[in-house]
Amino acid sequence: MEQILLLINEMAPYLLFGFLIAGWMHAFIPRTLYSRYLAHRDFKSVVLATLFGIPLPLCSCGVIPTAMSLRREGASKGATTAFLIATPQTGVDSIIATYSLMGLPFAVIRPIAALVTALLGGLLAILADSQGAEAESTGEVEPACGCGSCHQPEPESLSFMGKLKVALHYAFVEMMQDIGKWLVIGLVVAGLITAFVPDAAFEIFKDNSLASMLLVLCIAVPMYLCATGSIPIAVALMLKGLTPGAGLVLLMAGPACNMASILVINKVLGRKALVTYLASIITGAVGFGLMIDHVLPRQWFLSNLITQDCCHEHPGWFTVGSTLLLMLLLANALLRHFIGHPTTKTTTDSEDMKQTFIINGMNCNHCRTAAEKAILSVAGVTAASVDLATKMAVVEGTAPSEAICQAVEEVGFTCTKA
Image (cartoon, rainbow, N blue to C red; front, top):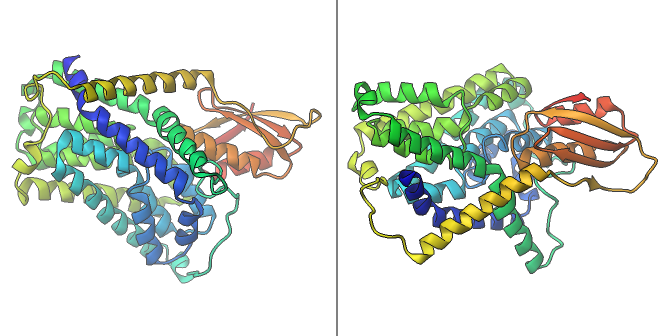
């Protein structure tokens, strides 16, 4: 418990600042900016998709519908693949949190590794998709569903105070709902590893880079880890003897690879794109991990780790206040998760037919928003409400159920009529 509180105290101020920056990006950077420059079938779009994706605060599941929306708008497989690789590995919030627990070297090399692996994956996807490469397009493509990058409605018409309100709500309500659960899980897992896993358990992996990385890959690839929640787990494993390179592998492969992403990419982009996606992430993670362990000074990556013995001083009022605020926001997010989401209406016609659907594959508010907007884009739909907790969608209007399910499946989810 003491280790968990120590981690929270160290991360809280940085997390709150990172969430605030993420909210500012959401409210003040037009969503159309992303689709405008990514809807091209060339390597330039791969570079732009990577640069857009690195600071974007999307979690591992939230990036899927966003990427599928870009794909529907005309982005090449290369740009989509690069976006899928770069975005979940980093984010402005996770970069700042990485600095808080692991120090500047990890905070610098993490986005660099994401940049290189995304460019590699996007380039390989372009080369593999020869048909797409021949069909290059330099013109802009209009959005198929009118939802931009599957975020909330564009706040361009709002005043500065209106945009600020949107930024704060996104940062401290929506992002807390999306990341909070996984952050708590990461902290608890890190505390359990620290408290109950004996140091001798990882003796065979101590100073063995390749064995440490293979162990981490076996853990990280199938399971779900968000970019921020993976940080305390990486710290705990490194304190138990795994190498810094293995810690970086967890930070890269954990958020970018999980079964949900693997299944959706295979379905929407195809098996070749999936192989390219996994090979780029694993190769890049192991390559950068080996560079940390055998080329760069290891002390860079060990001297800044937070340990139980490093900080016996009582935290200051700012740290305590940040920790209390973070806990309150997490509690609010949990409460909102169980309350559910109100209906989104475009008209009020009491005679509209109501249909209920089960939507699987949603794990965060980005997923819920993407599914809801996909439904609202169907001709004949007058109102839609998607509940993240129950996976239920209530749709009003005269649209056929087949068209509704098709729209939902096009953004990466499965849909069945209840």
